[in-house]
Amino acid sequence: MQEKHITDKIKTSYPFVDILFGTHTLFRFPEDLYKAIEEKRKIEDIIDVDGEIYENLPIKRDSKIQASVSIMNGCNNFCTYCIVPYVRGRERSRQPKDIIDEVKELAKKGYKEITLLGQNVNSYLRVEKEKNIPFEKYEGVDSFASLLKAVDKIDGIERIRFISPHPKDFTDDVIDAIATCEKVCKLIHLPLQSGNTKVLKEMNRKYTKEQYLELVEKMKKKIPNLTLSTDIIVGFPGETDEEFLDTLDVVERVNFEQIYMFIYSRRKGTPADKMDNQVPEDIKHIRFNKLKGLFESRIEENNNKYVGKMEKVLVEGESKNNKDLLTGRTDSNKVVIFEGDKSLIGKIIDVKIVSQHMWYLKGKIEN
Ligand code: SF4
Image 1: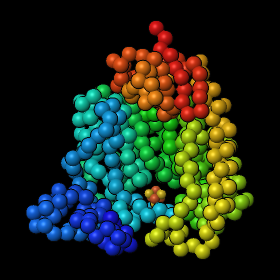
Image 2: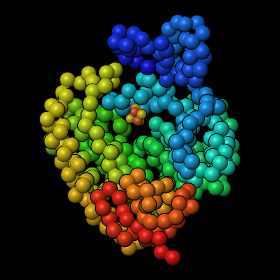
Image 3: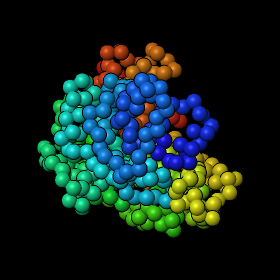
């Protein structure tokens, strides 16, 4: 509850709420809860600061195979549609040792796949270097590329993913690290948001259509078996039909493995919410359906490239729809369903892909 208009709403519409806390006071929740119970009073604990990193907070993990590890908090990019920089404060990175120790601990507990998390992961430690904020280099880690290399060396961890990088910060050393680190998955999530340079400028994304496409080409050349996923917003204020065609053009050219599509929605407190050229809802929906149609028309062709191939699959558990089958994912994050013994759960195994379906692949273990 970091935004004032939201805390005001809670207080007026839900007066029975006892504790209100914000993103910067999450670490004080046990203390706030204790006070609310012991002192029988309402607690409001919201502060407006740039934010700190708090270590050793307890983490509840849902999976015993895959874990997310936060490497940084906050964001300095101020994309005009996004509230994150206002509610999560300025970008700051965790100390390399804290991250490496957490991953080693997870490896000891048997976790196989790690996702490094941050609003802008590929600028890890950049702000610290620019502003001379002290950090301690550990196991050679002083950048995102060196962090990938260090995590790649940790015994027991078999797959490394990361979300989300920003295209403007995708430096060559990161591309080289992805190419050379065996455990780093070759599916890269590269948020596009729009394929039109004017819209990207209005969004304050700091890259052009051409720069994005050049980056993709460079990555495709350097990273064998690269696949890409992306985020796209349709109907950003001022986007015309013609400008939207640029988004479809980039989708055609890049051939994304997965697209997370969003219809632009206004967020109070952001610059885009104040823009007076909002796109009518019906037009946003028409564009969304066009994008969805284009993406879905490529799925079969994209999935067909897997059929007949052997894929490394991390077995996640029983299939939700049929307990007699197992489910797992390829390096490119495709869901694979196949017959197999439950003892395979948590292992990476070779599965031959025998058929493709819209949202999953069917596989077979060959003896
Ligand atoms: S969209 Fe991502 S990069 Fe842009 S301001 Fe929000 S969190 Fe930061």
